Image 1 (cartoon, helix red, strand yellow):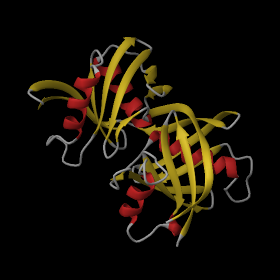
Image 2 (cartoon, helix red, strand yellow):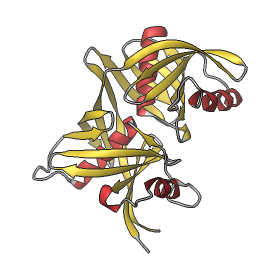
Image 3 (cartoon, helix red, strand yellow):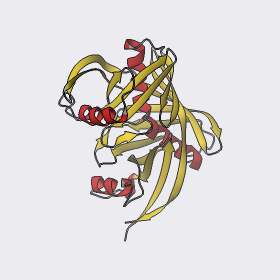
Image 4 (cartoon, one colour):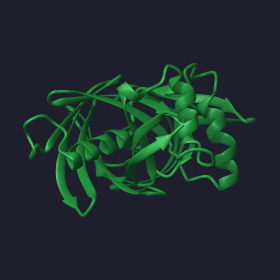
Length: 267
């Protein structure tokens, strides 16, 4: 039976499996679904295939359902934590900047500090794109949503956070709405004060997640434009608080990640 060297990493409860590209099977989507299954596999919100090229690392991201995604802010940090923890870049054991090549472009992560096993990074995600408000008819109601891209598609609904029943009805319906042919991530975001935004998250291809780096970033942009928030805010998700700075040159996302497991898995 094949044995895969597997790493698991976590950022605010948003967890990912990391697998070197050379170990991927031809049926990568089937493998992702198997490994990410929380009952029959190792369990994770997604899987990252990685490969090294001197001082950069490339990643291909897959959601738990086997579908592909362009980017994950938390996934970026998980991969960067793995790189620095294992000192995996050639000839430079003290490197504090990790450069990651993604399907959404090249991203840089600066190590801010390390506390125990947690690595705190400030990641440069680039500029938000195609920001607009859209009225969407969903589940027999009309929802005003802020639609944008932060490397992946986002749909942010500003206002008081919905109760669990409403969230579970609206979030998946928005994620797969015809407005978004490729699907979208969904956040409900409440501006508690100009420097603090609270969110609930439904990720495309995953479902409910405790945190999302790109979701926090998209929510911060929507809150700044349409909700009276500052351009630097703390974004509070069920899994914890990340800081988002929206500057003229792009979005900067700060938070931690840690490697929780390194081992092997027989399939």
